[in-house]
Image (cartoon, rainbow, N blue to C red):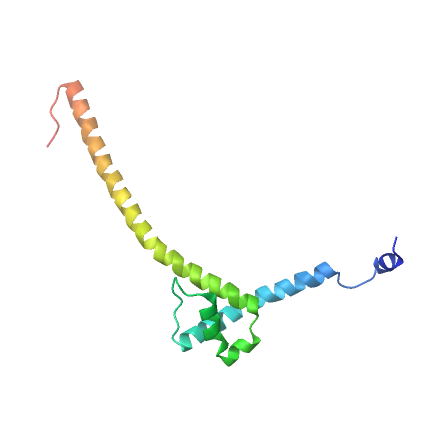
Length: 132
């Protein structure tokens, strides 16, 4: 065995995994604050992320603001993904909502028709007339 490894075992302090986890937690904590800063920059510059907006265009707009100097590049990319995904969902939801509404209406209509058929069968079996 390597004596350096053996000497390292049992030493007090943070392990490399601990340090990595601390770094990731710090980035997670910063993400929400940095996302707010990015959204403020976009609002100040009257820039709207559309479905066809590229990350390069997004980053170009952000880079002109002095507040962007302290932002983590990974958090900027995550913010772009979040904002563009939200926009895509909103755009895609409209046709889907229409389709769901149409299907729901058809199911309700079929349900009414099915009730009419059941009533007709019951009346024919019992030899009565349906109530008006």
